[in-house]
Length: 313
Image (cartoon, helix red, strand yellow):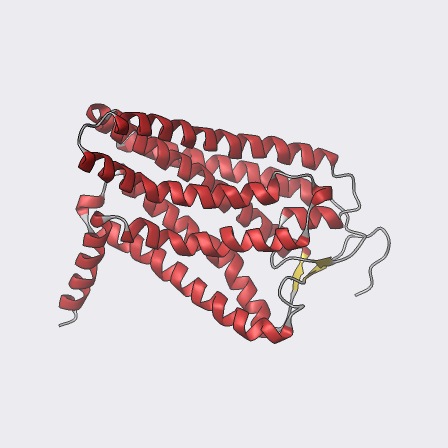
């Protein structure tokens, strides 16, 4: 495919894992295992929560949506990577690239908002237990979820709309394993100033504000927990919240490493390593973090498997 100095191209070439052919067999097996664990683990959480009436509470309602988001996230990114390695065909159309970028950003932002909402839910449950059922009623939960979906959709769509106006004249080769924003900006020969200002504004709105909500919520939780006289009570609350804080730390840490830096200082090595964490590792670990550290989830999973065993006899 010939590329002129100033023309829009129809295909991009994803170079992410194509430059190490001797490692592709190992990578494909590793990514397939991670993909299967992610999808099966998150689907099990959804099925276990759905089948146990005791878990039909706001906390597990948001956890179900987080698991659903992580499942879609893996299908958007890892499935395409596996297909590319299997077929040795690393091209993606311009439209397909924008579509993948849209779903990646929308689902990432949705994860971001859901983690903030889950922190708020824990704050209300621990710091305002007498008002929990009133504050976190079904209508409030649906409103928070709808606001998270709508916000993530609009923010992702606005960036994709701006990106669709760019011309790519330097090269069609993306040094990444999916259509991410920083490497695409490096290839653009159009003026990206408006896009970068918009992206920075959205990063503040969708990154710093939810993160502030998480930090403030947990600051109140820690203050409340420290006033509990019983050591057992403190351990129970910290154990409950520890899983959420683990996910938040890994998720925000890797995102800030990639997206809170000027596009001129983008490094392909960092840009490849960090996304592996939040696109593959974090969604895979979520089922283990939220189930193995939670006795209610373990009981629901045991009940679910027991029901399946008896129903087949």
